[in-house]
Length: 101
Image 1 (tube, rainbow, N blue to C red):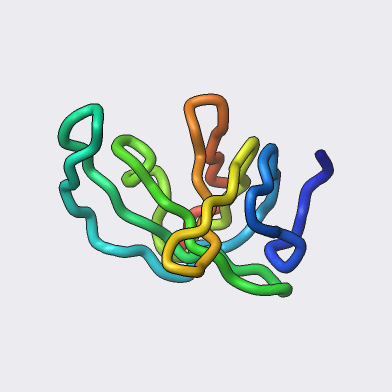
Image 2 (tube, rainbow, N blue to C red):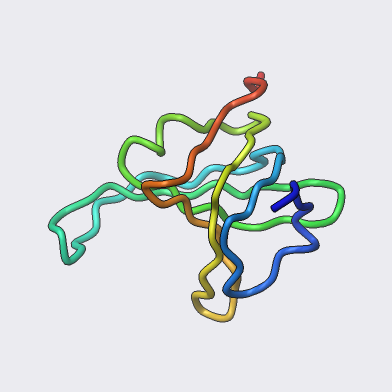
């Protein structure tokens, strides 16, 4: 799939590649999952077409900072509380192209 802009993303999409800036990062918290305790956070990504929340799990949390320009590969969309959210599974990746200041 070609690289998309945030405004092109829709519910249930998979295999998404995009480049955007992390404009906000949430605090890390511990949650219980079916696999046990896990750390979770999020970043809000933005490009010229819109913004979307990116969920960050475990080691992904420290890889993204506010102001970073990131490239997501093989992301997927889930809808939670009527809002689309991006997720990166074990077959996806987050690459930081430029660190924020």
